[in-house]
Image 1 (cartoon, rainbow, N blue to C red):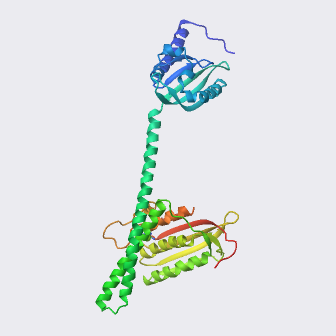
Image 2 (image 1 turned 180 degrees about the vertical axis):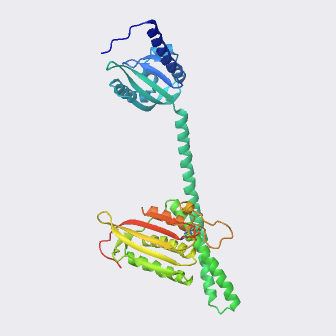
Length: 386
Ligand SMILES: Nc1ncnc2c1ncn2[C@@H]1O[C@H](COP(=O)(O)OP(=O)(O)OP(=O)(O)O)[C@@H](O)[C@H]1O
Ligand SMILES: [Mg+2]
């Protein structure tokens, strides 16, 4: 062992300086810093402790931490104090009662004071977090109120859309009847215009109805056994016609091992694929649209269905590939854009995919086409269907 340094005046001075430096750190620390003996009585407190508790250092020296901690918290803090006395540093959030009776929320750190291997006391450090916790509580409450208002808004929109849909259905049906009443060429053109507008409006209302139902949390899935092959052929016949009409090639690429039976909401799966294929055809002027599918065994009794929708169209600027899923978001929002649509299709797809615990990703670059991948892990249907 090293010999202790002889207590020369220089050594004494440096020891005193060191002690003074630590004293100053203790006294002027902006956090409440204090020392307790092993019974939990205050032996030293700094200015910030005095401000936080309202007691003078002289008053505190005769008190125990139990006199300061809020009554309901004493037991919990006592357990933590015992752990610190056993040598374990502790950190907790609790509450004290100020001398004037007010409750103050604090973040507290307790450290054992160890001298030559023995715990001889406890150092404490505390910070007033009342403002922080109040702010976060208020934020939480404001958020809950906003969420509730959002649900109320979505329910209102859902109800309104329903009210709009009913008379619109009558208008469209009447226009269809009118079409067959021996109209002149000019009259027939007017009626066709009415029908086109009516159907477009009806689709928009359906989309608004869907998105608000999903946002209000009232859209539920209707799972049933289905054959993925039939799902693909159903959407395909419609999409092939749209693509061919625009002079595009339409490819359906089905993996020979694609499973025959799954359990899922086919109507909603169809809706997702229709929206994606509608986009692929709409935003492609030359080349192809491709729908592909394969399946892979997942957990026992479950299969992952992978579906891809690819096109050689205008593409989406890569920096918009995420935000394009927000409702009403479009790569070209200008009033002069060439394509119809409200910007709801992808938002609905994302929400429906989330509802099904599936995955959806879109990769694209301007001028290089778009590639959308979907993956759904679904229960395998016990018997082939269809
Ligand atoms: N395959 C695609 N190729 C190029 N751009 C696409 C493609 N799919 C989506 N987009 C871009 O993303 C935007 C949002 O698509 P989304 O389907 O949500 O809306 P929309 O097709 O404009 O309108 P809606 O689907 O409501 O009729 C589109 O306006 C378009 O700019
Ligand atoms: Mg769309």
